[in-house]
Length: 286
Image 1: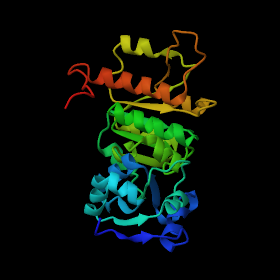
Image 2: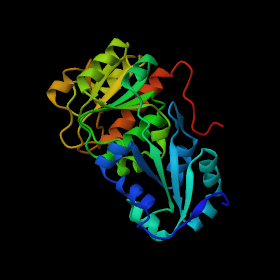
Image 3: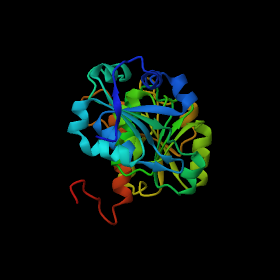
């Protein structure tokens, strides 16, 4: 840690104040910076590179966390991030969690232009339309990453990708796959269709059953799943844009599935169908 900056004693330090303001959306948008908290998110941020350079630009760490996660500190320094040793009070002041883990990174925005996602000819995409809960948005992003999706699209009616709760819920997956933000749902659907992607709207009242889609062999083509609001699902005009409106079957007595669970089921169904010829890659493989 000899190359780290001196310990920051006062929460009133200008650098601490600047980091703390990133908890508010208007400051994040103005500075195009956001916070990543905890070892997993900071580790992934330090490893992430984009056309604009390294993603992690600054890291605040308690002495205890710096010793415990020396590899992360080293990775941050190797990435060119400015590292500050900070008192616990400083971390608590910056953090948006009740129990901070001693590491808070300041990162550059990393969203991808929608046109670049289309140019890459994606085979599996999650579109978050009208998703307002940041925890759900981050969890769906994590599910998409785990299922091997090529991209995630957040429409202009959805939550801020860089909301601290969304970043935490993604558990580092935010740094793993392209994410486009602020795309009107009509534009997202039209662009994906033009790229040869089939649009499936996930809705509990859908006319088509996910099991039937799998049995009929229609799930192996490039697919984008459109997921709606946590409370009221997808509006009729959005469902009308899809090639099919698909429901996840409820075989037991549960009234419904929450958004993130339904998204995981749908994305994994597509991933399995698309990889059927070559088999699925196990997470236990080295």
